[in-house]
Image (cartoon, rainbow, N blue to C red):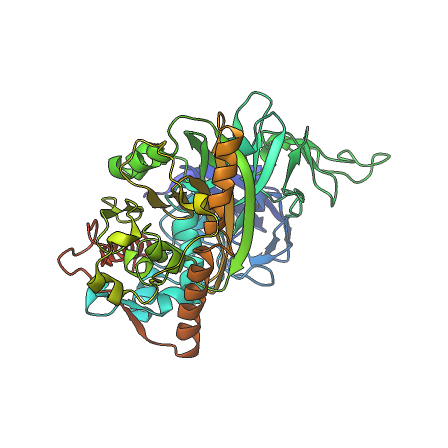
Length: 552
C-alpha cells in the first residue's frame, strides 16, 4: 500500500489527538511539537476510541479505563492495558499528513507490527468482527511451535486442547467470537415488547430483548461508559435499560438514550460539547432466528443459518422444531468441572452411551444393535446422535455381556415414564443434536430441551437447560413431557452419569498431565458420519474442524 494523505497538520491540535478512518480502519493521529505520529485508533484492552482520550507527556490515555500507551512506539505502559498498539509510518508533505498502513513507525514496539499473523484491533473491526483483547495471545507462528499435534493425526488428542489457558483464550476469539452462530434464546422466552433475558456468547454476557416493533436484539451486557454489567435480572420486562452505576440509559435497540448531567452543572463539568450519543450505544451482535430459536454472532457477514447447519443437520433440527411454536416449561442450571468441548464429545460418542448409562441400555433407548446413526455435517462441527427405541427384551445375550450397565430385571415404578407418543416426522425416538459451538438440542422420546454451553475457563463451564413443549399441547402431554424430563438435568437419570464422567476425564488430565487421548474407534470412517454406535469418527471430524479454526 502506498503513502496516503489522511489529514492536515492544522487539523490536529498541538499535543492533541485526531481520529481518522483509513480504508475502514480506525487510526489515531497525534501532534507532539513539530512531529506527527500514528497508531491504531482503538484501545487494545476494551476497544475504546483513543481519539476520545487524553494526550500528556508523549502518552495517550484511554478514556475508558485510563490505560496508557507510548505514542511514539505504541508500547502499553500501565494496567489494565497489556497489548501494544499497532503503529504506522508517517511523513509530512507541507501541511499534509501521509501514512503507510503497511509500515510500522521507526521506533515501534516489537510485536503487533511484525509480519507474524497477529491482527490489529483495527483490522479486526474492518472485518466486522469484534475480538476480545486477550493478554496472553501469541502469534500464529509461536503457537504452532509451542502446541504440536501428535504425528498420528486425529486419532490422538493432546491434553493441552482441554487444559491450556492460552488455548482457551484463543477459542473465545476464534470460535465463540468468530464465524459461528451462537444460541442465545428461544423466542418464547421474550414474547412481548420489552421482554428480555440474560444470556451468553461464549463467556461474554449478553442481553436478548424484544423491541416494541417485534424485532429481537442482542447486545453485550456492558455499559458503554464504565463497563458495568447494566442488566442484573435474569429476565423481565422493561421500557429501557438503566445502568445502576451512573444511570446511563439505553433503549431496546441498544442506543444510548440518556446521560445524567451531560451538560454539567452551572456551566461546569459534563461531557465534551462534541460528545455524540449515537457513537456510544451498546455493542450489538448480528442476530438470526429459525423456527423460534435465536442465534447471535460477532461476525456481520455470517452465512444464512440454514447454510451454517447444512442440509442433513438442518433436517434433524427441523424435525424437532417442526413449525409448532415452542412453549417454555422451565430451567435447570449447573456448573460442570470440565472443559466445554468434552460435552460436545460426549454427544458425539455413542460408544459411551451403550456402556455408561444403565437407564438407556436397560430400557432400550440406546443399545448396541439398535437402528442408529451418528451423523456429522460436512464441516465436522455439528452432529446428531440418533437411535430408534427397541424393547430391552430383544437385546442379545452376547450384547448384554459387553454392557456392564445393563440390569436384567430392572423395572419402573411408573410405567408411563417410557411411553413414546409419536409426534415427529422422524424415524428416531432419541436424537441429540450438537450445534457448534454452544447448543445441544435434546429430543428424548417426548421430553424436549435445549442446552446452552457457557465456558468460564479451560476447566469449567456452565450448562443452562431450557425445557419446552409446544403451544397446543394439552395438559396430559405437558405432564408427560415433564415426567420424562426426569431423564435430564443435573440430577437426571442420564445427565448425572455424564456429568460425573466429564469430571473424571478433566481430573485425569489435571492430575496426570501431558498425555494424549486415544480416539481410534471405527477406523473404517476416517472422520464423519457413522452408522455404528461403536464409533469415534464424529469426534475426529470435530477436531478436524477445531484445528482448522484454531490454526493448529
